[in-house]
Length: 220
View 1 (cartoon, rainbow, N blue to C red):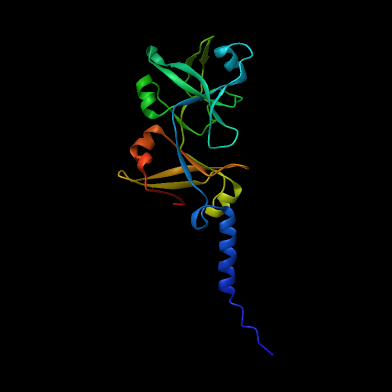
View 2: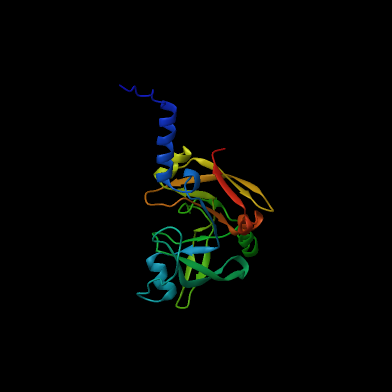
């Protein structure tokens, strides 16, 4: 009669962890991290879309974004700031939203003469306004112009992997010829969301993101 070898519980736990991590995806069990540069853009309400582009107008998809259901539209607007300083072409992103919002980089704000507050997308109370000009009309925003706070989108599974929850802060290390660690990335957890960090153009240029050799998202 043969006698079964004793169970190595540490080995079993390691195998279970590897299976779970493999199901999450990505190399070596890690989630697939994408770091994207979010160039200047605006989100429009249905009403403002019609004002700017004509009655009954619907946004036209130019390019799908990384997150499912979101897209860069064919439509662009002119943004006019104080003292008639302007950006002639600001891309509209879809789908439409309950409130119109413009997201710019700090250098855009300097060029326009707008003191940009750093806010999470959607938090536009008491922010500066601007004028948006389209081919069919003009929208004067009383508020809604921000510099978007750097953030990390992730699913509940990704949040569990990193040991974080919605609203927590994380850090991003970018290895390149201009290696940088960005602190204070706010975690935004949502169902059916892919793991993605959003930086603005100033941040992307500062770390030479296009030529990065490695990126790492971690808890500080």
